[in-house]
Image (cartoon, rainbow, N blue to C red; front, side, top):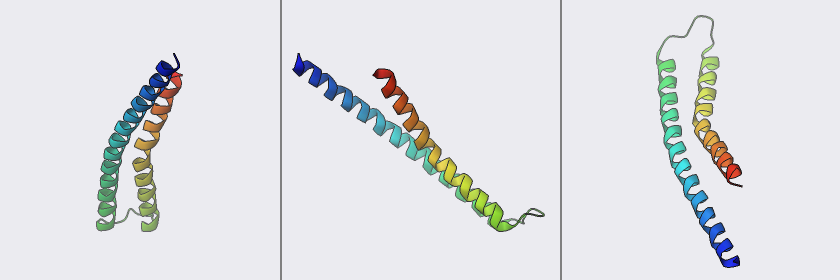
Length: 90
């Protein structure tokens, strides 16, 4: 009986690891896309005229913050989803 329980735990751990790795790959792809979009937005801001009344450093700072937020979001949402799956299974 203990052997079956131990094998079930190992199987569940491996399943959780596989799901986590799939989420990591998916989040990495989405994050790379968000970074590419953010770099494009930075390039547009650098090459176009400034909006009236807005300092360039402010708009660049806002764009960089948005880029960072968008690059991090896929990881945080996948991690939350993985934790919810794990908690639902317990």
